[in-house]
Image (tube, rainbow, N blue to C red):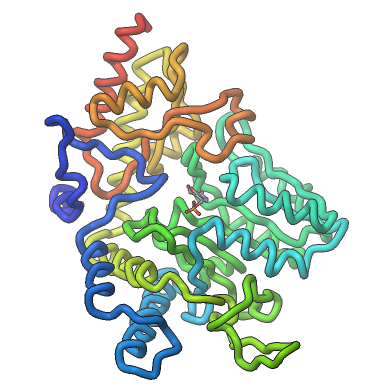
Length: 408
Ligand SMILES: Cc1ncc(COP(=O)(O)O)c(C=O)c1O
């Protein structure tokens, strides 16, 4: 992969603060944006801005066309039909959407919902809330101490009462890849639905929702070169009647009178109100950028090489503990989480910041997982197509300096 060429497309990576280059190692939180995406959004506002589906004038029709083209681009990218793509504000809204619009109708007292101990709060708290509202039982697939999911427990956990399994494809906190194909098959064997949180996988690997045979899948545009404020909720066509509208208002009505209304077909019945038009167009530009510049096999090799380099550097120091399945991360990871004995992760991140290095420190919105690992927080370095070996070396050197300064 030509990282040098890719870096030129990202203006923010060429900035320097007080002569220090920006070393951005936080793409798991949000990715940087290429000019192609920035230009597409600005071009939209300069030349096409109107509301969609309402104006009978040319400009409004053009905007509607661009918005629906964006839906087609997303659909093709993940192997879906366009009517299976619902634009949301982000993955969090997509999951809340399903807990409300599908869960409130289909989950009853005594039913069981299964999630994992790995989940981001976005794929945990909405299910806790649904269980509280309905009297359903929430169960967890545990994480073993080697950082892997205890999938051997599935036969015991998945029973006739299981109505839904919601699981992350790749953990944002420790980088672990989950065998979702296996989980989907086991869930479908008892007639349960499956939601995949693909926030950390869609930006890094090819996903085909029809091949996976998944029921619901969510991701956020901003982690894959796209803008904030746009996410995707995939709803399998066969389930469109099982899912109610999440919100009500303009844009989703087929016919309304004073006391009743009927909805348009999916996806429009799921998109009340003015949608994130510029953001959807920005996301389509991000996918276009990926299609033209990123080979997912090469990306995986590149990111795993950066992980392996960082892990090897960290393993030189006894005071550093790495979390997550190290062997798997070296082969296919895009992030590494660690702690330094005696130095709070926030202090590690603050020190690295002085050297122009952006890493994340905290519980990474997966507090139950941190508790399970016996820590309150960790430092996380995450990679994307534009990161370099030199940046990893810089991080390792700065950590070495920090350890020396603390006599560790
Ligand atoms: C695995 C995972 N799930 C869900 C989310 C929530 O995404 P958003 O904040 O874009 O809705 C994130 C974001 O960090 C994530 O990494």
